[in-house]
Image (cartoon, rainbow, N blue to C red; front, side, top):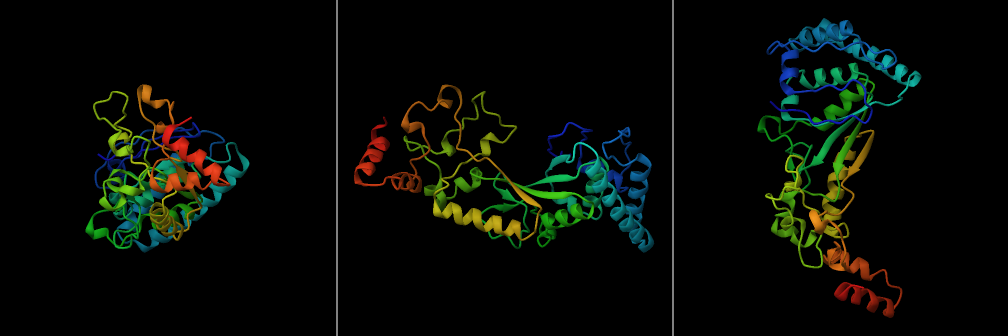
Length: 311
């Protein structure tokens, strides 16, 4: 079972979304749903209304045109009500992080997922677009060195991000692209043609050889082992990331959220940077950017000495 990862910046009515639950909602297998109480002022759709909409979706997926029209009308009306409710009740925004999978491209699954989110009163969705060396772009149109999230050849031309943005906005929600920034992922860092683009400390180490899987301080469940940080001054890094960002922006999300705006942090005593060599400024481009801050030759000499000897 593939579990969706999500966090709740607003602590209201949390729920778990799994692919198996959504499949059961569409009639692939029936499983009882948890009862959710209507919470006044929290903009949640009633159980009855949500159930009716789900039944319309099931019929529409089977080809019933009348149900398809009724379902679309219900979506538009629910979107209007959600926007009106959020404009009149606190909190104005209720957001959720969402990780998508290729199974969400099956008929009706993405619709059921977004309906369920909207029915719980969420009006903002933060879709995980770039993380762990993969990006949520079509496999046949991915101008980046990263692999696609959706790897099934049958969906090579499907644009899960674009479909989610469109369907989410139809339901009155704002859909944001959530992306890693300086953490480009292990597969990127292991490429021979990207070695000079990695962040590097004064001992010549990169984040590739910092993580010890036997270290109890390393959180493998949260993807620590897949973290590889790059030099933000490197032109190759900027080009790779810029192309990916432009591709994401072409899908017209309501905004972009950038995470991992930082350098790698070591564990234990090494987590405290006490020497100049602990800093991640020793890769080729970062050193040059550092030296370029000097205003004259004397300043350049001082900065060079700092890189070589520290304070």
